[in-house]
Image 1 (spheres, rainbow, N blue to C red):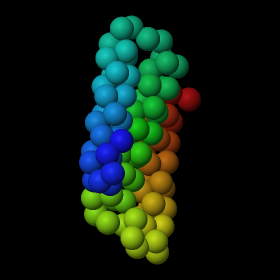
Image 2: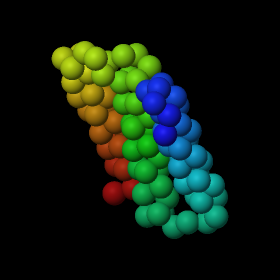
Image 3: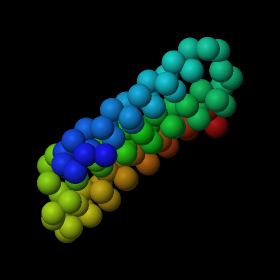
Image 4: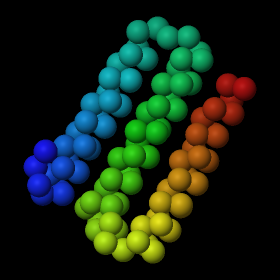
Length: 91
């Protein structure tokens, strides 16, 4: 891994995007409803991880623990809300 934190963050973002793409391609292969819901939840989880990585590395919140914690809590609550809205119709 490179020593530059921005390059490391970029590499991790590429890996997370590849993971999202792989899951999305797998969905097209005719999965059942439970597997589709799990795939959507996994893509949402990867999106949440990407958002945290962008906030910490590119916006510099890693150097501001108070603000980072506030953004992480807000982002986590928003992701949980989206997950609830996504899963609710399947219950």
